[in-house]
Length: 372
Image (spheres, rainbow, N blue to C red):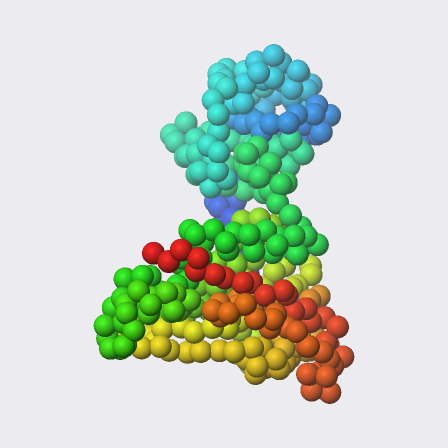
């Protein structure tokens, strides 16, 4: 259950709904029987007449308010009209006769398409734009405002979403992410660049040659690398999964979940705690900074932290399913997985009932193969 009183997104949603209600009250057209009849007929006819693309039906406010008395027949005829069938956009009058049309492509991206449809309705002509989805859901645009329950505005966005993976395929997505970490344009963002290592060499007055120093310390991470790892993993999941991805969700006692995932149904909660092992540069850039090894950083500290979060989520009556521990291993040597040997015995006795919901992911090994 969401904690609505502290949920900024929920408060924003309430504010948006308040504005919708005010708009409806001030305008009145959405509450008219003609509007309600037309939107119902458009949805019903779309269900009866299957379509794979999105369509716009556009009518002026004045024509809508004097809608034909036999609108049911006229809308049914419209959906069989060759002009309607061969054009994405049709303008109709009070009699549902087509007065204009075009087959121009909609903007490919959802937000661009939404703004485009809203702009059509925001003119002196006072057009009302009905956006009809293949599944018969309808969004509508009045005075530059959008309403309705549809999620997608374009076929491209719908197809892209359908290709995304569900929460039950998280492991597959994470395996794909491991591959992306081997790509130079991904891993370079985590490491101090060659120029930074050369500057550090001069500052530290090392007795080695510059080339030896750079090669020896090519695994040196940028300062506060956990922020880079959080964002990179979070963005990858967001781009490849249907889940709702949140970041650094604050629990009641100010503990933070690094990445929170809500399944595509909006019910089940998963989270990922991100840790790293290796060495980062100092914030001043003039010496080595933080260094972490697997023990005790991961075993037992991080394990206890994740299981404790699971406990707290249960106590808060959240529908928590799994708490994952993701470790980015950036140590120079190829060492065993930081999760080797982890067991229920590493967790305090009072937390062990929550251990079955804990999953230590295979380490994300990050190598700076070709520093630049």
